[in-house]
Structures are given as structure tokens and as C-alpha cells.
Image (cartoon, rainbow, N blue to C red; front, side, top):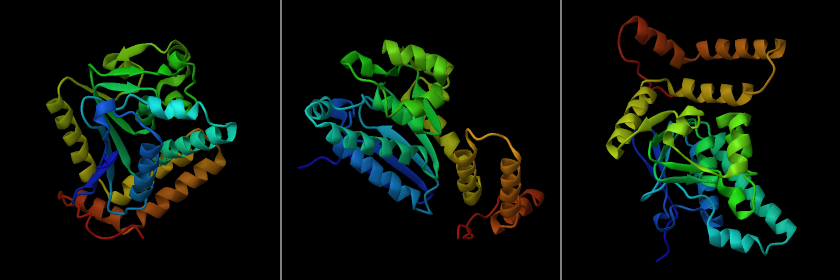
Length: 267
């Protein structure tokens, strides 16, 4: 019986649970898992009901990075085959990074190489303080190329200069200190509780506002603050104010009640 390498579950409240499902190899990913992840991220991007995506690993670890068998096969590829393989990985990472939902990674055990890259693509990261992180590619003569744009954005070039080149391991507190991790927990129960707090925040927010906020970040990140950006930002707030969701949110605030986000407003 063939194992499903990525599991997808969705609940009635718009939460999608994406689980890396190769626990016997600490969820190391191969070309099949990469394909499945990309397909799932694209599906969720188009799912208007989905509001938040939680990414986690089955078993003891989040992900140990690239599967050794996959990398061994790639060593015998031609340049063009290697390029196509790397481009597919790059596309998967970007589909997570640009996903139009809030993305949350829950990390325990190992988060190595490409696994650390997946974390860097997420908006929020909750990690066990005992989790082990590493950009270990140099240990086997490789470089963290496809993940580098996302890791650089997450930890900054100064930290990248160290950890890209040393390949050394570090724990949750260090990951927190450099900005890779947002929340540290000590037990699985604590991690679940912290996730519940974050999901409660999301449930209280306007779905359209969440989607437009993520788009705002993706569109404005790295751009110069000039007249064009100022005009575009003004246009966006003017447009959102006119939508039924914003009117309902303001009315609920003034009337001291919970907003009713049930009305469809994503068209």
C-alpha cells in the first residue's frame, strides 16, 4: 500500500491542516512530496473557504530536509534535469510563501535544510524550544540555493552569513532570537494551546481583510516608499472601506457585538 506523503484535512471554520507524512525518515522530502505540497498549496490558494493553513510534520520531526535517495538520484542527472528539478522545488516554496492565507508552521524535532526553508516561507512559526535547526547543505557539498531568498528574509543577512556557511545546529531559543520563530513552547500541549490562541484571533477577523492584508504585504515588501506606493495604498483602503465586510465590522464595533462574517464578500 502506497503511503500518502502529504495529508490534507480541513475543518468547517476554514482551517486547513497540511501534514508532512514520512515520519520514518523525519519527513524528509522527495520529488513526490514536493509535487504533492505544490498541488495542495495551489488548491488552498483557490479555496475561498480556507482562511488559515497549519503546516506540521507527522511523528517526531517537522522535516529533516531533502531525502538522501532523492539527492542521490539528482547527482546523476544532467544539468538540464537538475535545473528542472530545482525549479520545481523553487516553485513549491514560492507557492507556500505567496499563499493568500495566513500560514502557520508548528515545529518539533528536526527542521533541517529544506525543512528550515519551508518554515521561512510561513507567516508564523511556533516551535518547541528543544527543536533542532540547521542549514546543513554545506555538510554534504551543496548550497541552500532555492530556500535562500526566504531564509534571508526570515533571519537577515548577518545571521545567514554564519549559518549558511557553518552548517551548525542551533536550538529553539536561538531560532527565536534571530526571528525565525515567533513563539516558543516546551510541550506539545503548550504548542496546541498557542496554536488555538492564534486561530481564535484569525476567526475573529474579517476574511476579506485577512486576504487583502496578505496581498498588501506581498505587493509592498521591498518596494521603495514613493508617490506611487502612497497612491496605491490610499486606493486600497478606499476600496476596502466600501465593501460590506468593512461596514459590518465597523457596525459590530460600534454596537459592541461580534461581527457576522457570514455574508459572502469575496467576489
